[in-house]
Length: 252
Image (cartoon, rainbow, N blue to C red; front, top):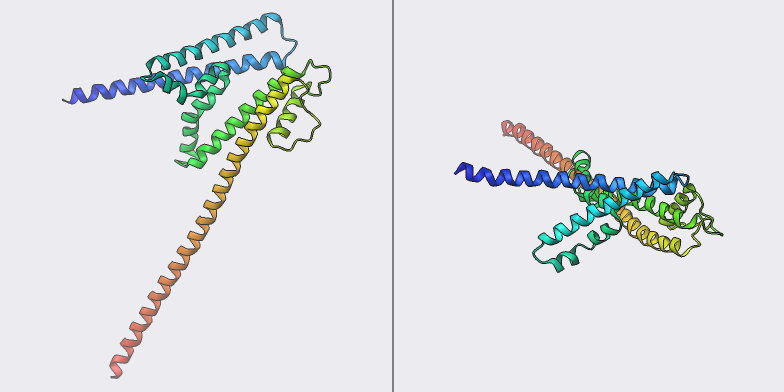
């Protein structure tokens, strides 16, 4: 009987280990894709052979994510529902660099929260937003630089310019000193604006939640201190009353 119970548990642990290992592999592949995508843009003077290696890495990573998606789709009981409920997975086939967001939410974020924020949902959201903002900003800077660098009237011609444009756009400041002039660059700008609104909204909501929680904690602490003072005062009054009664009884 004991063996019948242990075998399923061992099988489940084995599947969990395989799942974690596969997730780590996909994350490493996404990082490799991001490096292969960024290197030719950041280093325009890159030799042709190195560019071909980067292209091969990008193709291999795309194929790996395609296999992963198709394998999970084949295992799904209702495939149309799987496609409907996993739209991000379809985007992963077009942009594998988004994969770390999904995996970091399940792995790295939990590890960080175990040390920092425990089981706080606000903490998980904060870490996720920080990672998402960094990746979205970095990818947007690369994309707009690739689109704008060779345009005749471009004013975003370096990675520094692209990062400055991303910062002013995603924070909705919009100085206007750097802006895309090509159609592709403007599409990147639209996507970044929408992402910036969503990310800033999440940051604002998380900050407001934190402030409300701190105020509630302060008020609860003050109320607890007041209750403790009242209890202590009542105890002293009872002691004084008992002493007065004890002194009055011999006189009677």
